Image (cartoon, rainbow, N blue to C red; front, side, top):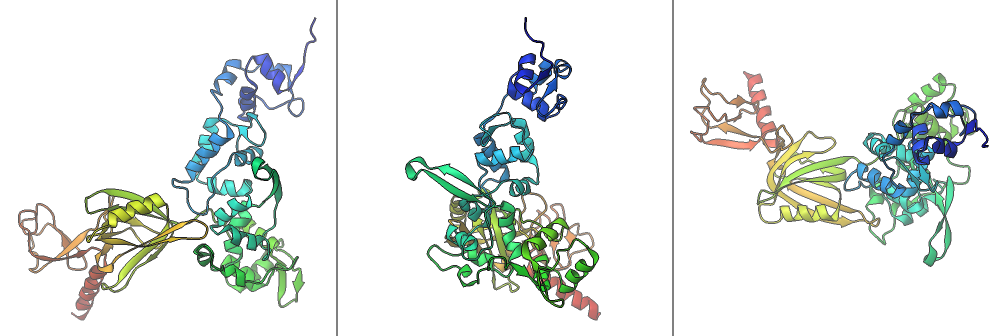
Length: 467
């Protein structure tokens, strides 16, 4: 006669309900069944027998491996993958499970099986990049990718300069390539914060170094052990505030880090303690990735394509005789497509450009690819240019396109149905008897919202002020 069991572990509970262990784990992790009531990983007979076996079974139609989950999270970060963002690995899924963001359903603890729906929900979260930085450490190659620098430059940061220290290590068996090797692991947050903590470094220049060239980091002085300290002015530079604001924080917040050296007039603070305090009090943020510019172009044949440029640098000329330029990190495929669209005398036209620091722009034509630069870290930086006189504000809607204003040589009559603008121009309405499709009047055309449009509007305003 069998012993009547009163306490069940997860294997016994799954067997009692005739469901898989993975299904039981998902049911407990998702709250479908009550939490363990008689100790860690132990359920009473009453709790187990009260569970709906069919409901537990139906809640887990299948599982996916860590590699598949990693690929789906990588795809959620952006296609193509942005610069300053390494691929999500199978081991990263293990870290997400240990952080409580995914439920462990089986397999190796380092590379666990997980629920596909839970992975999909995590992939949809807008804070996914921040979650990865917070919970997933990076090896040296991944950390260099996260910072956007060459591996040799990252070794300088961790070695000679002493700005980062490992938070752990992992043994990797490279089999035919030397056997087991111990790889140091770094906090992804600490890596991302390097730009914030060291604002005096020209990080753009460091990322733009070509292979074999000397890095700007080589001229910097290393930090002595225990000597990574900040004055009040240094804290202010990190937080992008004035020194007086930091003095005020010290006075108002009793948890502000205490000085570790210096004098009463010029106290010194431990850099790590200060950064932790600034993060905790929302004075600084962890950069989660590069800024992005989106570009919709049309070639001479009318083909329309949409591109993304990471870490864009947009320069707009103030003279109609000058040129505008836009550079950003691209993929080889996008660079080749853009080059083909811009080939020929007419070049390409920009139907819509959305970039930080500027409203939606469009360019009538003559957009050219003027440079393709390969950095030492492997990234491709593309530079486009076009005549400033052809730039204007993009039309509303995703299709974009330059709205052109026409300044009539004869003033419009009172019956004109066209929209008027401050430059003195108008956008013809198709049915207007004076400027519509059936008339084709003689006008001076210019891109609406462009340099010529702005100059004409200023001239009319000056004339009105004199009257």
